[in-house]
Amino acid sequence: MNSVTCPVPVEQRPLNEYQDLKTSWFFRWATLDRWGYLKPIAILWVINWLVAGPIASVSFAPSKHLPQFLLLASIGASLIPILALVRLYLGWVYVRTRLLNTSVFYEESGWYDGQIWQKPPEVLAQDQLIVSYQIQPILQRLQKSFAAIAAAFLLCGVVWWLL
Image (tube, rainbow, N blue to C red; front, side, top):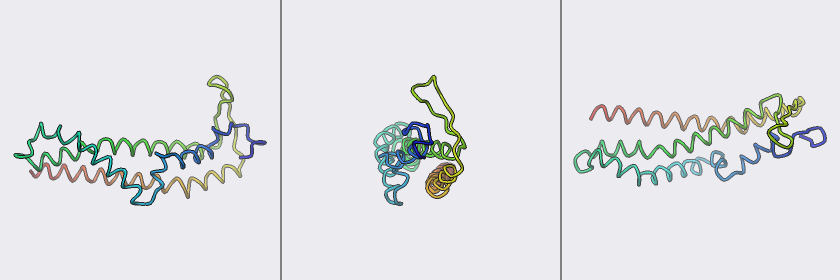
């Protein structure tokens, strides 16, 4: 977006919001290679075991009910990683929506003076390409993560039922 033809303040332009998200320490996590992406999830899960383990041991003593204890603590330890993944997903969906919209809502100096700028076709085409080739793969990766977590929870439920 050329600043001469685009009245939107620089920090509110969808392309700049995308660049900021891509370089943000938290949201960049979804753009990393497979190991770089999975490592923080695993670290969050292990750290949450420090909280979920003692809580699960109150309900199921590990010495008497080890399978139930492990299942319950594992599910409990998944809470923070799931919340982190949801936050990643929502941030990337927001930017995708801003890029795909044909118009950009922006504020010149405060909440009371909102304006709308219609994107020219070349800007819209550029934004659509960014969504197709940069953001959609990130969202698909996050969706696969949610599917894997759902499958793991389903498996835990089946194992719990069999116990």
